[in-house]
Length: 178
Image (cartoon, rainbow, N blue to C red; front, side, top):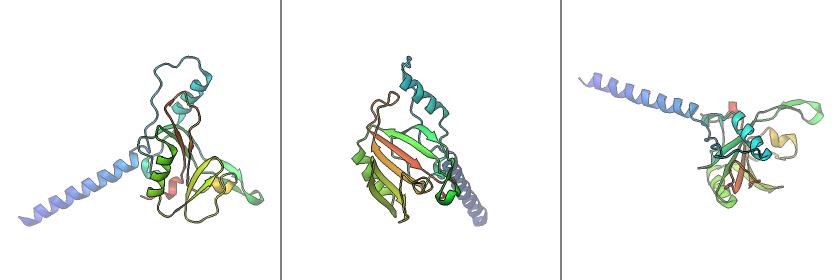
């Protein structure tokens, strides 16, 4: 009698674990921003709507950095080939652009707590986080081939007018923890 119960329990655990893993692989990194109630003919709003419509949100399991709670995706930028030092071709990493109504300091505190082992520096127009101690320069190709999180004050948005903080998450799909 015990053997069938053990097998049933083991099967249930395996199915539940596999189901959870499958959910993480298909669950989007973060939700897309909702469309505005009124669209009108505002060119900025029309551009933001097109960016949102074409955004390809990756699965949560593909991205190294956690999504900021409550942030919404407004655009994505695919990786592209660029010429690195000495003209060698490299592929930049794709980027997810998110907005949140929270203040930049709150977002920074979240990433400081949730990106253990990542470096952090205030550079140019905001704060950057990247894994390890590798050289990182957001203006050079090195800043485009390393996973990173860039937090800054949000630009004006007609799509998400309440946005206070803009988050750029650069990720390496094949290197994400499973």
